[in-house]
Length: 426
Ligand code: NAD
Image (cartoon, rainbow, N blue to C red; front, side, top):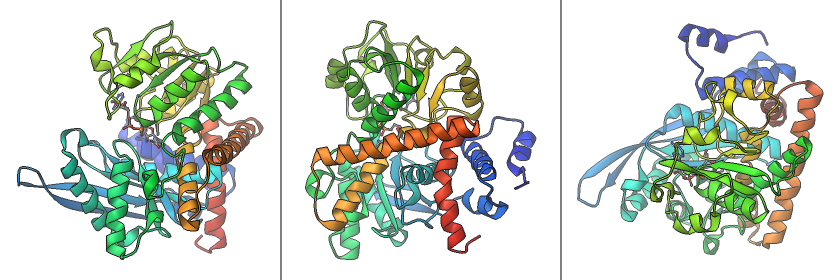
């Protein structure tokens, strides 16, 4: 493959590449290393399908607000597409497209029979009532129902969506199709066909790959000082698991600020005080900023909030030995280079946060077979998949002399590149 279109475009724009452009750039590098042709890159650099919808919602005061939503389906050559739905004021088409590609990578890395998908609605659920959120959730499903379904594209929760929203969406889809369709969506409440272990699965996955990373770096998680940025679904469960495993959680944060204590924070008390949107720091006058938190002393740093948090500005000051990316896209391309040069091991997002989609897959399998597993069985299967995925990526990175992110892309893309070749698409 010879085209360097993306780097040329970046040069012209004279600004840091967006996450989407960086993703395309790494896809290109990975496919080059794997000797796939230009057509394979052309196919995999963008989602196959992106639907934009407008969703009218009757608000509680009687007025109508029209929301914009998206659903991106990266590639369905391996199987149906799969990925969460995000409710956030900053959702853009480009963000949803990137997230759908990262979902393909996660499914490829962990060997799930899926391609990646992702959805999002521009809205701020923190300012909406329960009834308004229900109408928005149902309206979104009506708007995308033609392109989703248990054998086409299976949504799940993401930032600011939860099991209640999944339940409304499953109910709406079942009404449209006129049969009960638990396999349409994952992350459901247990009584509607959810899987045990799904709610904490992303955090559980992060702890598994963190433990393996700590082993190869030669430190123990027990006693390690850990900073977790973000105290929502991923970050709060993670802080709890680490605390219970004997790690010292010295820093946590939310959208409004951060708390740092070198002696360790009282995680159980913070969990009691946090609200359903993962906010807790507003209760503490001594909070610092998120940016200050990231450069505090620690052994392991876990960004578990939003994109673009570790950049070329703060990467030189990061004090951790390992960065485990529980959030999607928290580290820029330039920062990845800086951290790698400084000998800091990065466990990339597409590996570190794959626990959620793995257990979502287990949920879908259980829905399809109508037979439900015990928590031990879910945890044991998750553990096996993630340990193997970590070591495959780590070994590939050593053998091919590439950083962990490029290695993860190589491992994650290979099966999809093979599938599109076998199908005769390229
Ligand atoms: P969440 O909505 O439950 O929590 C988000 C947390 O981040 C909250 O504590 C919020 O206050 C904080 N936050 C929001 N904006 C912030 C900002 N500007 N600066 C600092 N903190 C901010 O979301 P989540 O499900 O925990 O997801 C967090 C990250 O993990 C996202 O990148 C998401 O894509 C990724 N992820 C989540 C899952 C999952 O199953 N929940 C799976 C894979 C990846």
